Length: 68
Ligand SMILES: [Zn+2]
Image (cartoon, rainbow, N blue to C red; front, side):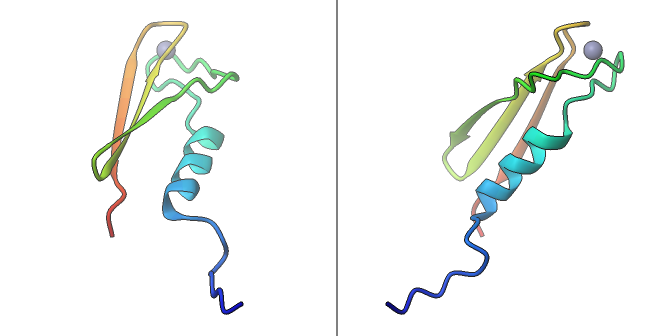
């Protein structure tokens, strides 16, 4: 019973919730994608977020390292 977890959220979960919650506005046209259709996938020690603006088709991609 000696589980000693701090906060309970993994770094990956924190990145996901942050991105899903805040990065919905397109920097190109200002369209706010309420559906928040970021597509995420993990790639080795990385997580790649990709979003295509439904208004102007601008693509954004963010890559994070999830290795400490
Ligand atoms: Zn746009």
